[in-house]
Length: 260
Image (cartoon, rainbow, N blue to C red; front, side, top):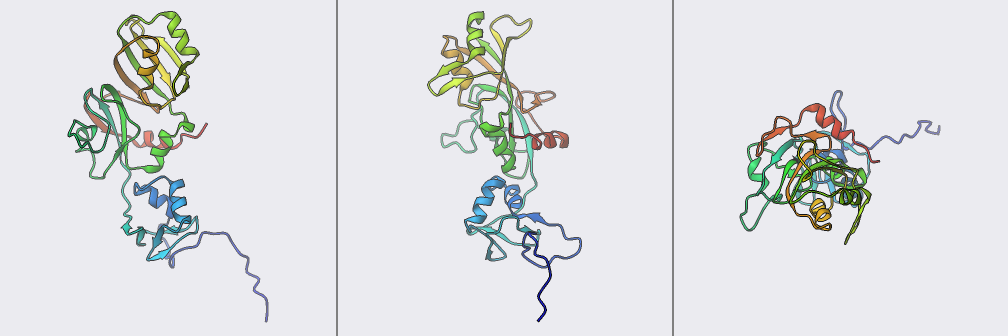
């Protein structure tokens, strides 16, 4: 009997017979696009045997599927959603949470008419902080924008209760030691023509209440805190309390952000 001389390939296994012109998507991307988790986390679910396609457990990474395939995570049917990206200029007095048992004002009420898909805030701004807050159902992008290793840039306009001394500004620029470690900023400066109570500060840290804690450690009180830039996005043409959908070029730019 003649030996089979066909070469083996490492192409991903398909879950059904592929028809000409049929659009295929990698299984991990399909899961991430449904807002379940990031692609990396989806890979973990697949290898753990937690994902079924057309009733069969699939554990092979790189598996491709079509929209006709039925994908399940446990007993939950995963339905692909259109990715939505909403940018809000958050006003003061709203908390960054999806649900609040105390029935306080949440940022979700401000964007309730923005999309039929369920979206989630990327990171958080505390109740008294204003400015840019992004919402999306893109789990992979959310992971990228919130993970410390990606060092996403944020710029804040800070108003203090008194003039910031030059000596204290130099201390912030050189790194401030707090209970959770040394906090480094990328740039700090007085806001032009606003006096020395108003400060512009650029940093990558996403630690909780980081700017307020930095200035409190030096004896200052933050009166106003406004995030004016987030990951290259600005508040241009977004009045306080209003939102807009991201443009395609903005979405593409966010997706191109790479780990530094």
